Length: 296
Image (cartoon, rainbow, N blue to C red; front, top):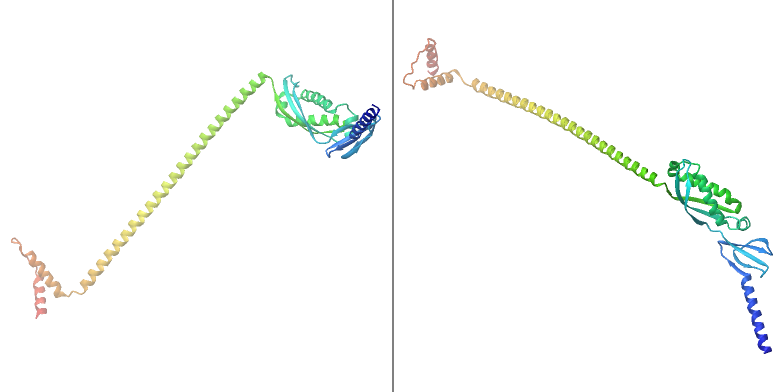
């Protein structure tokens, strides 16, 4: 019995020692830090890597240094012009001082969320509904600035704030829908009028170009016709001139006797008619004499 009890005692002590050693050794990743308290006093932050703690004496709190994102659910706020709206947003933060984030506030995430809700209501209470709907970026900047002013003393940096949705009252939504519908109708009418005007301008320009082209074509046709007539007249005149020249050249080679024979031949043809009578002038005798003399 004594041996068994001793064995159990040794085993129990061994388990306690192993448990103490396990609790004394911590492995801290690169993105975390360990804030160590020794007998209730903060002795600073440790990590990354292997950190040894004194069992029972040391107590540690892990702090994540990565950028975190938190969602603020829909919150009801009253704008400057007494319009109730529902807003939700997300905010990003990062711990810059692990020790301050543990010492300055009990739970900085819960405190920051409550501060974000309060700040949202304060910011929206200072602007009108139209500004709240149209100036989201300005609201985001104001929220980030005010939150950062508060969380800075906690060792936390607010890096960004994004409003996701703003829901106005139902009657305002209906009014906005009617306004959007009227605006779309107005734009459609304007676009239709612009299209009609552009079409009329295009048709007029086309008619103008067509008339110009038609006039140019008629002008070219008239010019070509005049040039053709002029060319034809020149060719006809050249033909007449050439014919007269040929006749003159042919006539210049015929002597008096040949002319007299042709004259007699013509008379012969005329005398074939039964009712043909000849009346010869006095000069005909001299013509015959000359012809006979020439024949001899």
